[in-house]
Length: 384
Image 1 (cartoon, helix red, strand yellow):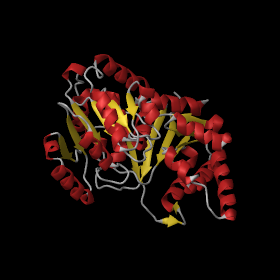
Image 2: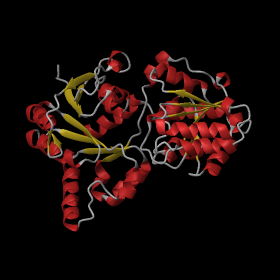
Image 3: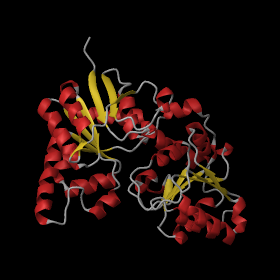
Image 4: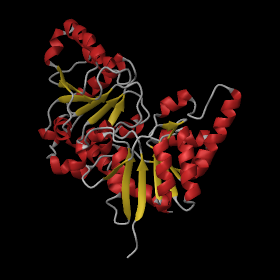
């Protein structure tokens, strides 16, 4: 009997909520593969990690003690790699980080045959504006950082981004990434969802528009969504806004309803919902999911909404073209209230949303956004 290969994800900032995102889902599903043992290495950032009891039951979570930093590098990670690199077949890190270069170098030095995978999880619009995470306005420092970037590329066997747009941009800027870059979205655990929620048919759904996120933050741009609702024709539809509300946003909400009292019965703030099954039931009831963010990478809310057949209305984001399937599963509205309201109005025209479109959205989700298939692609690339 051959021994199982070792896949190790290192993400020192992991909290309980990360376990149901890419940080936890990738090692969780790779660990379900008969050929792999997988674990997630992190600091203990929460007193408890309740998702281990249900959503990711079986995920091996290993805590290391935070020993501070050596310049920008986590001492505990360096110590872990010094002691464990030889037993790790695949090392998984996240993001373009300068500190990752030393981790990758140390791992490759101790285990030359080992493979490395870095999931970039990047907002390409932010990346374009920032130019590069290996960039400085100081000429000499910029030359050194560009050289460091090349070292990062050489030490990494596989990179992944979430959208074709991000992949095309990176290959254009860094041609050497062409043969070691793949595009994978952030997925969902469809098996877990289907075991806990009975999927509604289109006919069973309600006329509900949903948005989910940290309400009132600069990123989420909730004010754009509300201002578009002020001028949209909501007909017999209701809007549910789910998520924790920033205290600084409370005066805006108060003023909004004072100016638009008729919308008090139409727009409901639920507050934060931490129970995932309860959250899934909201997606299950809704027909439309809206996101008015200024910037995003690939938010998990898109994948969750599409699983339940929600039509997407979104501002232009890195992942917008993908999740709307170029107009088949959603629409990309402009970044002002008039264009966003117009997109809502088009969607609310009777007959636009129907059982056929619902099934089209569901099929897109099943084919593109399920973690078991996504991790197969990762392993196939690494094993070649």
